[in-house]
Length: 118
Image 1 (cartoon, one colour):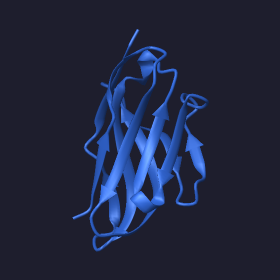
Image 2 (cartoon, one colour; image 1 turned 30 degrees about the horizontal axis):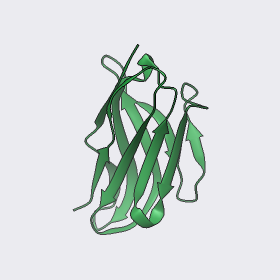
Image 3 (cartoon, helix red, strand yellow; image 1 turned 60 degrees about the vertical axis):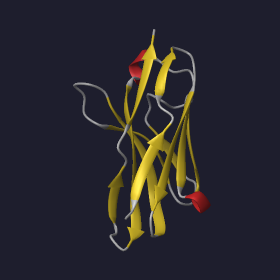
Image 4 (cartoon, one colour; image 1 turned 45 degrees about the vertical axis):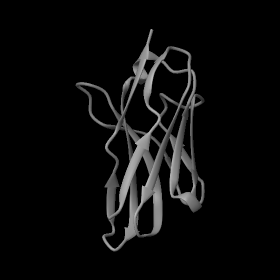
């Protein structure tokens, strides 16, 4: 059974850094684009960053220059390095990927809480 598991969330002060990880496990043939989304209370889920299997990246304007997405294909893992964190970055962060497997579809992780205090 394929699943995505995130880790690395926590409570930090404004200006500090966090690194999120998301590992895909199970019988995986390949993974297309991997994404990080976030959802703050009362807000819709928004795309934060994405990375293709070839390494091309895309970022939301609100995080450009502060966040960096990367992946290690051999480990089926995607990372989100978050620097210069702001209180408005507080949200639950979700990993998402379209995974080719015996059950090819879009998969989501369970989410990890990131809280930035001022």
